[in-house]
Image 1 (cartoon, one colour):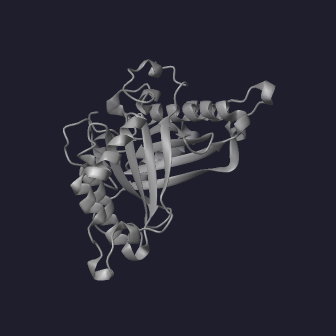
Image 2: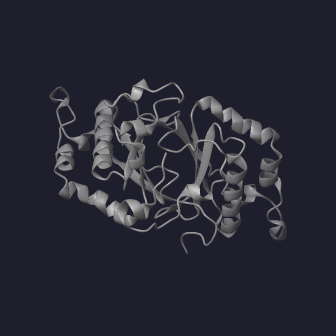
Image 3: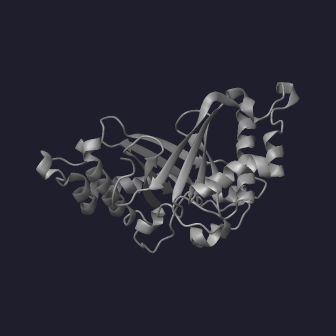
Length: 304
């Protein structure tokens, strides 16, 4: 996918450096939120006293992993801002679920990986590695699969190179007008729990919301829609990619300035036979929340 700087696209400078800036050149296609068949989202909470060591471990781990898995996966690491302090997020982008077997092989046989995970990194602090840096029981995972079956742009006609059609096919836009998890400074994951009764209507709204955002803010903000697989039933996720809070402000202004967006928000997605209603009826109350991420880089941690 062609890369264009944020200043070229929006006239504003980056707030944070994109994740791809820290990746080695492996000679393989970089997988990201736009072209992956699925994403494993792994979260871990650092102990505050080991925040610097934990970040260094996370960066070293990604460096050690990306080379041996480059032909089947890409791993990016982020930290949470405007949320929980010292909470890290790994996004493992893959084509197929079975590709995860490569990670198991690396964990069992790769010497560089074992050095990262087993070397004493806390020699002057009573010894230890990652097992002392992270809060016990804090590691959790979700599996995101691009929402499929809703597009009218032929996304289901893709070659079977990925588990489901990649999220970029939801947009109907050329690749050079799209952003993704590797080339932006900010990623917002908007999670929503749909009501079982209106699960189809909620997905239809979610797809239309993303489609309107992508067309109105093409090249500035990109929204992809995912559903959670092997996790909580009917929980969906928008992944929003942008570079600055200025872009987020433009997103917020759509409901006031864009007539097509306004019309979409007032459309009755729920049919009369179910009582009718707009998108508000399709989600569980208090079931929508945002997680704001920025790529992890060496230097001073975000917060305090």
